[in-house]
Image 1 (cartoon, rainbow, N blue to C red):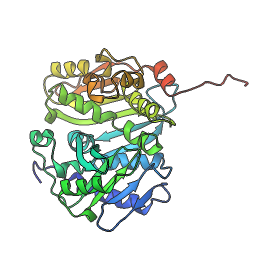
Image 2 (image 1 turned 90 degrees about the horizontal axis):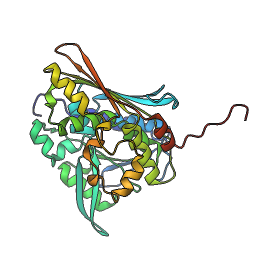
Image 3 (image 1 turned 30 degrees about the vertical axis):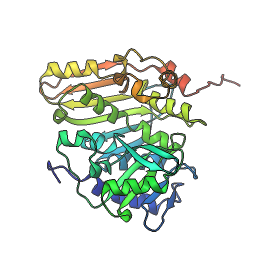
Length: 330
């Protein structure tokens, strides 16, 4: 393995094994077929749950971060949130968690595309990011996470195995529909990842990021895909907060803080479901500067000063979450 970094797949695989061992308690379904990868259903044909989503989020981070569900929130009227922390933010968030690989394969209904996240991407290395950062994971396992309303078909599984270049018994595919509790948790747990991705877009040197923490209100379940997707994204864009510790000149830390929040985008201040609908359902047609937490704090290690920018939008987030207040005495 290159660059002295740990293997995200080696660290994630034991977490997958624990997920399998406790599948019943976590309301998951394990699908094993001869000659196929291990498939874990986290919400397609079973309920899934918040704890399952928390554990899957830590698997997405390649075992290099912690995700906790907690009381309190960046939005005071919403009482629950999740918190993410990692001392290896670039490796955990960008080289493992980020949904950066669009797998194209020939399915039974023609050419298909599947967006893939998780540490298995580091075995595939189809993204330019791995060459830029000089990261190679040669562990004998590959763990993938996909957001899908259905389980991947045989063609998709075969394509994942071929790309990972390991035996099918060494591949795990975790499926988290956005409408499931597990799916909502693992998406909201990307609050730090979207910040790191925007740091990269802003061309701030990634090797100067030392620590990262993030938190976001825990979004409620929704019966349809568009509402669920809107809520999980709004949790970050309207209610997310991130704290980064960075090396380098103080002025550059200040500039990063000013440019990093979602409030820097002209699209900020509208429900994500509305923005997505107007973009014709195309994520790539949406301003990339929108995808980041609502509020950030950047600490300059060279001086010890911290810089804060952005703000949360409580009223809009609560509407997106569908919160109705019950009058006292009702």
